[in-house]
Image (cartoon, rainbow, N blue to C red; front, side):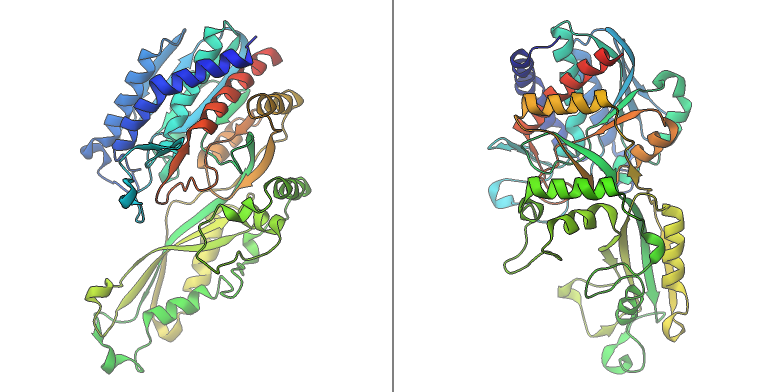
Length: 473
């Protein structure tokens, strides 16, 4: 049995003494995911982060723990911490990752903020990767320690910490296959890499969108030509690119025009979206830093939540072929390349969706120009299985105990490829997908922060849920 106040005290002190100082050091290391640092092995940042994490775990005094760094040739490492059961049955996997997104522009440098500069201010720890989701390993260990220090029972625990999640977890399936016997068959999988609608309760992620990523390139010339000479005779590659995007997206509404990328939204998810909209109210849109006068695409909060979780949506996230403004001369450019990020709902196969997008964009090229669509690492979406009564009760109790508010359910618009993979491999497992990425936390963008008070309470919730998992048998 665990005691609420004692659990809170143990975890708060552990965060202050052990976790926050280590997260400061973690944030300083520019450990970019392999997609953004192809020379990750040579550059050494990943090895530095792994050593930091492993050394820290070794100092925490976990009983019955064995820590290994798993390595496969040419693949990013995985940290596996196995903790023997203390009176509980079954296995629980706790998941997180240590790789990071690129720094991005727009950090408030005038306030001392930067991607690799940890700053703790007003309960928020700023810096790239702290919330997404470097904290996960440290919070998981803290939750387990709070159990062990109170002599509470817990099942066998496996901490699985990877280093390629921000690249779509391409390396993780190989570890899951090669180390299947060591990992075991879990009754519960806890992932701390997701979001929260507010900082007032425990949020359970019920679904994740998938992703189609690709480079759309339109070539019209072998080399650039004076725009005064060529324009009117040679079609602009940018104009053609715009027209191609109109094949897959209604520019006026943002609606995706490809029927193959839609699913029927389950009634339970529509109900949960309405309930989440009632809980959040204006917070559904207030979390975004709109410019003055800008409004969301709908006034209906439920529609907005379903848009970001169960409907496809396109973002143009990068470009090539355009010079910077200061060096842009009067030249009709030979090509335009756009990096497209197309979110797809659970139930739509990413490979099939990529083929549909490619065929739609490249068929019948205007003026006979050269059009290609190079698909990158995509990901399938995921829908959580129906939770058992013991897990629902455990989540409800934890949220009410440590936040003072009931738990809530919400879908997420991003992807965690690991979830679909584990869901397929362990069809009988229960899932708790949650995290600290709440309003303004801005994962992947500038000024990312970890809401420390929320993270401490989330850690206590994990302690409570692990104890209830042991009691569930």
